[in-house]
Length: 533
Image 1 (cartoon, rainbow, N blue to C red):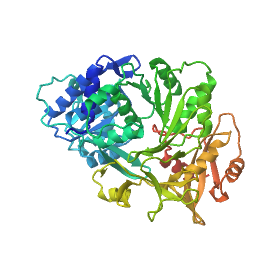
Image 2 (image 1 turned 90 degrees about the vertical axis):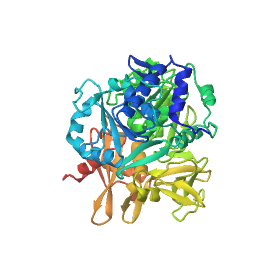
Image 3 (image 1 turned 30 degrees about the horizontal axis):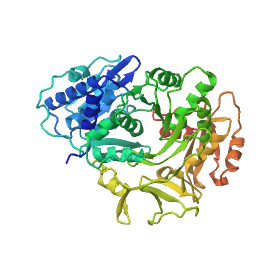
Image 4 (image 1 turned 60 degrees about the vertical axis):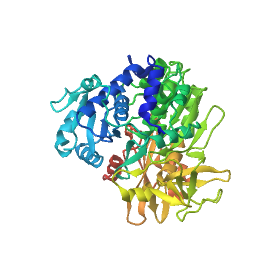
């Protein structure tokens, strides 16, 4: 009995539609036949370099066809893909690759200098594969990607089988401590993703079923956020498993014009981005250039990672009235805890969803939160889930917990449950502000601030306070041309939340600046608010 694995799935799709596009970036189109052949060549090359079954292959790249191609190559070879944050410096890279036991790194040329500074600190890396990006030349200690991608393939090149037990490692973290490697079995991951989409796949691998799902003329999916983060990557897996193509933005830094051009040019059908951080600039571009783009192909926008405010959703839908917006709440550990869908004439409260399946809201002593009670609880999800964190049994025990004899993932997100069963997200416990004994979750204050017409973006932080332990500070980016007083915004928050949740200080910035994943750079902002005024 063969278990579901992504190598067999993608090989089946390639055999079914060899000439259809698989990867697209600008004028560059990689058909499924070439993707399959090149992935097998790279896997063959790595076996020849001495990599063993389930050795780790790190992707250290911006979004590009080689990112997904090298991941499929790792699956094909029975290796483990491992995501790498391209913003990391030498110390962070050394920690990540040593913690993850990395044996091979596939990297864009622009990162060669950073690797040079720390390469001697990761002695277990056997192979460095350089991907040309028009910047730095291939170092003497690396091999060009195209050399691996054109390696000859023998019939008996792989000395071990692929399996649903083969892993994908998704490293997550940063704002809550050192990165943690979430270990997903490929079978659990694939079935979990399909269950969330409402598809009942067979429990054991059935490649005929895959063939029946392959779209002959499937339109592309575009992940606008970095593929180094789980949400962007995993939506690509779902598209590829059905024979769709993955479109890539041409520019490395996010540009809303580039995004809208790409959707129009490639006839993108589904788009993945990261909440307001991506949606607000896109909405501004649509407002400033009405009618410029034909977005008739776009059917679904999927958002995950940060808050996507209802006002911005409404603005997007006004410009693209046929689109459905799916706000997905989850993490690398849980996939989706739930989702809410907004369409024209159908609106949902920001940061709210209907719990389905094995999602529960549980008190710290293990009780289900009673709907309408106002009680806070932790989101928990059962069913297929990760094995745990790689090389970290302590954090595994803290996050993967047992309730009523069943194992649940409890990532630390707090929520309440309305009378009708709607789950209202409050925030991550690790970021909770304790001010005068009261708990305040930054997200709920940020949502209210961004409802004000003069506010473009806002981030809320807790800072040390001699009297209250912590006090609340908001960093606000005003809408260009708007002049709003701090007192006005503080009163705006007080009009919608308890007064103790209102910021005691507001710091205005012309541009907050978010990370490529759409999240706030909390370290930089803490330095900013701590600076003398």
